[in-house]
Image (cartoon, rainbow, N blue to C red):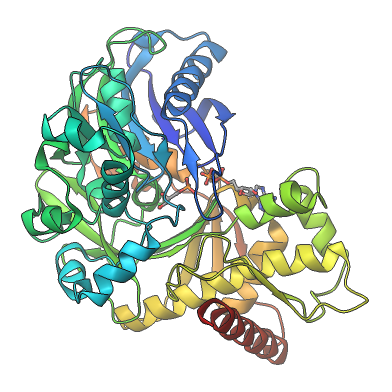
Length: 498
Ligand SMILES: Nc1ncnc2c1ncn2[C@@H]1O[C@H](COP(=O)(O)OP(=O)(O)O)[C@@H](O)[C@H]1O
Ligand SMILES: O=P(O)(O)OC[C@H](O)CO
C-alpha cells in the first residue's frame, strides 16, 4: 500500500476539497465541504480562517477513510487554493486577527483609486504584472493593519504574519513550523516583483506592509516539510503548492507556450502559458507567474472574471428560481434564446478586460414576456460572453489565434453553456475526462517533487478527451448576440461611472 496515492487539497472559494489520485491520474476518492460566505456589507466578502482550516482537514480525513486508507499510503500532499484571499494572524497565538478578506472583496477600491491618482499604476504593473485593483492581497493587508484594533502595534512587534490560503494551511499543517508560499501565489499579492522573484521594498512601502509579515517564497514543486497534525495520518511530505488557476493550467497539461485553459468555477479564469518570458499585456490582462519547477520559472497571461458559476448560485440563492446549480441547464434549455435579455453579472465589479470596481450587476431587455427561463439563459450567456471578451484580449496580446480552448471547473458540466461558448467564440471547446484539473495539477506538482512521477513527460499522456464542442450557431445570430452584449457592457459601465 505504501506510496500509492497523491492527496490534493483544493481550498476553493466556496468549498474545501480533498482528492486522492493514483499514478494514472485517476480520482480514487474525494470529499468536499462548503463553508460560510460572510457578507458584512455590500461589496465585502469574508471567510472564517478557522472554518477554512477545519473543513480542509475534515475532507482530507474523509477522502482517505472513504477508501480505508491511512497516511502511510499517501506519497505526498499537493496544495492548491483560492488566490489573493488574505489572512493575517498572530504568530504567538496562531489565531487570525480578522476574517479572511476574500479575493472578491471590494473594500479597498477607494485606496486603489488613490494609487492610480498618485500615478503609481505603471510602477506597480511593471514590477508585478498586475493592474491596480482591490482584487489583490496587498491593499487587503493594509486595510487590516489600519482597521483592526491593535493590528499595527502587533505588526510593529513582529508578531503578525500574512498568508494567502496556502500559507495558512501549511502553517497549520506543520503546527506553526513553516511560514511559506510558492511563486504563483506570491505573484498575486501586488508585493512581489515577478522579474527578480523577490518581495519588493518599494511596493511594501507603498502598501505599508512590514517585511516581517511575509512568508518565504519557494518553488511550486519541492518538499517543504511534513504534516504534523491528526487528520492527515502519519508524517506526509507537503510537496506541491500553486494557486488554483495556475494549478489548473498544469493539470490541463498546458505546459507549452501558447496553450490556454479556462476554468469555470465561482469566477472564470483564462490562463495562457507564455513560457519563460513575462508578456506585459496591452489589453488589460494580468501577467503572472505560472509555476517554478526546479530553477525554471514559467509565466502566464491571465484574464480574471469575478463572477462565473457564481451567477448560477445567485439564481439559486438570491432569486430562488432553481434549487441546485445543475437545474439551470434544463431551465435555460426550455427557451430557445434569452429573447434579448442580457445580464451583466458585475456583482463584485468587473474584472478583465474591463476592470471597473464600481460596476454592479445590471439586467437589460426585460419585457412582459420575460420568464425565469430567460434569466437562466441570460445568466449562462453572460459567462460565455465574458469569456469571449477575455479570449479576444488574449489573442491580441499574444498575437495568435487560439485554436481551441481547454475547459474545466464545476460549470463545465453544463453542456448548453459549453456549446454556446463554442458558438460565440467560433473555436472548439474541449472538455477533458478529469475536470478536477486544479486538484490534479497540485497532485502532479507534489508527485513530481517526490519522484512519484519522474517528469512532466511522464504525466503528459494522461490528459484524455471527454467531449469536443464545435461552433454550430449561424454567424448572423452570433454577431447579433455579441452586439447586444457589447451594448449591455457599455450601458453597465455608464451606470457605474455616472
Ligand atoms: N451544471 C451547472 N451549470 C452551471 N453552473 C454550474 C453547474 N454546476 C455547478 N455550477 C457552478 O460552478 C461553481 C462551482 O464550481 P467549482 O469548480 O466547484 O468552483 P470553486 O472552485 O470556485 O468553488 C458554482 O458557482 C456553481 O454554481
Ligand atoms: O476558488 P476559485 O476556483 O473560484 O478560484 C478563485 C481564484 O483563485 C481567485 O483568483
